[in-house]
Amino acid sequence: ATGQDIVLSTEGLTKEFKGFRAVNGVTLEVTRGTIHALIGPNGAGKTTCFNLLTKFLTPSAGSIRYNGRDITGMKPADVARLGLVRSFQISAVFPHLTVKENVRIALQRRKRGDSFDFWRSETVLRALNQEALELVEAVGLSDFADIPAVELSYGRKRALEIATTLALEPEMLLLDEPMAGMGHEDVDRTAALIRRVSANRTILMVEHNLSVVASLSDRITVLARGQVLAEGDYATVSKDPRVVEAYIGA
Ligand code: ADP
Image (cartoon, rainbow, N blue to C red; front, side, top):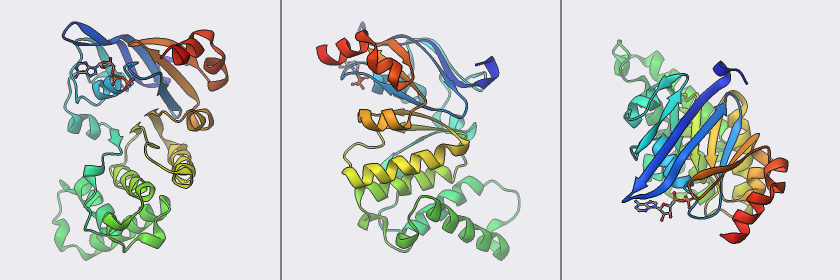
């Protein structure tokens, strides 16, 4: 890939906890339009790496670039404004509001800051409702539009989180174990949703379910002991003896 095809990259990303390098010099490149998975045995540094990307943690060394711009140490809200958004944060959903209301609030959040008096414009309100309904439909929740979020199944709650995230019109989504805690049916539905959502977006995800990783990912980076062990498509990395050993040895 040429330089401009890279949406997100890290260089020598490192995080130390009291001298222990949980992430140790990770250099990563995510190509525009791909689904890229970060995998590895427990303790490999996946979560730490992800938290560095979304600035819940500050790196001890190294840098992060998004669309060529150095975003190391930038606030999550500012990074989100640039189009890089982390999804699957259950806290973002209001449990006692309906699915449609949750999506509408997310849309309003994005649109606040427009210069006109938005609350008094009926046209805008109607357009907003329409947009909310379209997003609800896009994530497969049409039948649940008027149901309070709290009553949704776990998998559908995560679909709602995707909808509220999409309301921000992200160019790139970071998904933190999107399938965690899900049964088969929800996993299948969520995988289909991620595939649909990826059509015009770049996705980077940490995921433990390797069959999901195999079926969804264009490219996989395998971490072990804080370092990149292997990189490539699923067929390549899953046959790599170092990867096999890292998983067995973990
Ligand atoms: P993974 O997500 O791949 O399971 P983590 O990023 O959670 O790996 O952890 C990588 C290593 O860093 C582990 O050995 C873990 O114990 C250590 N670690 C993670 N967070 C902290 C912390 N806040 N303080 C000390 N050690 C940590």
